[in-house]
Every structure is written in C-alpha cells, then in structure tokens.
Image (tube, rainbow, N blue to C red; front, side, top):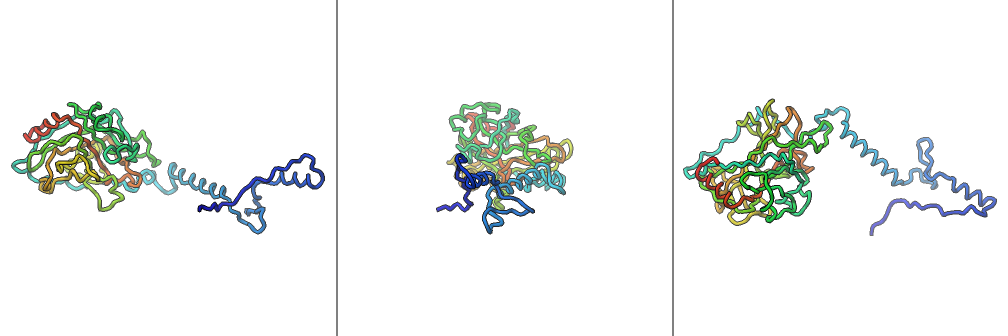
Length: 369
C-alpha cells in the first residue's frame, strides 16, 4: 500500500460573520486575516505549530528544484563561466583527428582468378528533397520514432516505420532505373556554439555514391527481394567490445587515409563517410533476429564463410561540405553522445528482379556499369 508522506493541508472551515457579536465575531475576523503562509523573520521560518522550526513544505522543495533546473538550462544555453563555446557544443563522444595523421587506408587482398571485379553504380540523388524521419523499418518496424535519431534517405520515398513490402514495391524512388531500394543513415549536424541541436543545422549531403561491387574470389549471386542489410552498431559507444564494422571517414582529397574518428579536412576538401556492407548471405532468410546473422562479412581472404553465398556488396559514400574546424556530429541515440563509433547505415533491396540480374551480370563480367 502506498502511503502519502506529505503534510496535510486543509482549508479552514468557513465561518459566517453574520449575527456574530462580541469576542466571537472578533475571533472570526482575526482568523480570516491571518497570513496563509508562515512568517519569515530574520531568515528563519516560524511555523504555526509549536516546536516545529522547519516544517515540511513540498511546494518549497519543488521551487528549489525548478530554480536549480533553470540555472542548469541557462548554463547549457548561454554557457558556464570558464568553459569555451567548443566545450559547450561538443558532446562527450565526439572525437576529431586531422586527416593527415590518420592511418593509411587498408589494402584489399589480391583478387583470385574467379573474382567478380565489375561495378554497378546508381544515381539516387543526395536527398535534396529532405526526406527524413526518426523511424527504422528494419530494427523497429511499426514504431514511430523508434530510432530516436534522424535518418537521411535516398531511394524509396515511402520508407518509414509503417511501410510494408507491398507499399515499398510500388512507391516512387529517387534512384534511376527504377531501383526502389531504401538506403538510409543518420543525418550529420553542425553543432552551434550554445551546444543544442538546431534542426536547421542538419547538413544535406553534397553527393551520395550508391555502388555495388563483386567478390574477390568468385562470382556473385542475386540478392533476394526485400533482403535487409545493416552496417555498424548504433550502440557501439555504450557497448565497449561490441563494435561492428561501421563507417570509415576520410576527406575527398585524402583518400589514402581513413579514420574511425571525425576527420578534420583541409580547406577545400569534403568530409566523406564510407559504408561497406556485409555481402555473404546464408541463402535462406531476408532478415534475422539481430538483423546481422543472415548476412555477414567475407573473411580476410575475401572469400565468404562456409554455408554462405556471395551477393553484390553495397558500397555507399556520403560527402558533405563541412565548414573548416566546425564541430559536427552524426545523430545518435542520446546515450551515444554523438560518437562516430555508433555510425551505421541500413539497406532494403527493392530492385526489380531484372535489374538485380543486370547488376549481377555487370559484376561477374568485370564491367563498370
């Protein structure tokens, strides 16, 4: 049973002044004229109850909490003394690295004699239309705002938490050649000096590359319709040791170096996010409980693990014109603190089967389509 421990406050009984005479009427008038709250004298609260110097007043505690909250909010918005604006603006997980000091880009293994070395590229725009939402159809279907951060989309224009395979199959698309696939990733924001995220600070990509690649050891087979594939772990910052291959970051004029941190690019160069999706399919499922087990990465040799089939590998590049030295972050779950380690991207294959067959042919025949 719940017990209310707050002091009881009751209104004094209503006293009619009509027909009251003598001391009784005077007492009634005095009772009505007493102050409703305790009297403050010499910084000391005096209670109407004998022996109580500091009565419990829930309204006083609430007022103190509200004042402290107001101070905290104003400090966050206007800045605390002794802290720079960059410290206000930068979340704990945001770490930057000058691209000149980043590690050299990893070198791929040498392709085997049966490798599928072709490519197929699609122009899907750069989301100039501003198609964005905080849903995730793969991981939280049917839950509006289930991602808790904002996604950019290219391709299928009906991608949201309530889309179905049927609605995706007939929706308009931003991609050429009737590719209705859904491609999405967290938006990039340039943070203000006051530290809050202004919706107007979302950066529209300057370009988006959608490209499919083959396998370094053998021919690829077609992806099944509505295959779901994800790259990266959106909870990597708060799950140490569970980092899954996510985005590499680089600069448009410094492709020989990449980093897992946010790069500082020289003047005139764009910030580039690179997503390489897993490409070894189990041959049966279009999704799995953790959205990863059904499609995994090739081994270090480039070959797919046993009991998996090589499918076209999706390669995404998202480039931005970021002001030099600006503090920028991806949208993340709040607890991820804007960390680049929590970057991720998602894909649902909604290509017509004939178009997927063309992609497979281009890769297997070594063509750049």
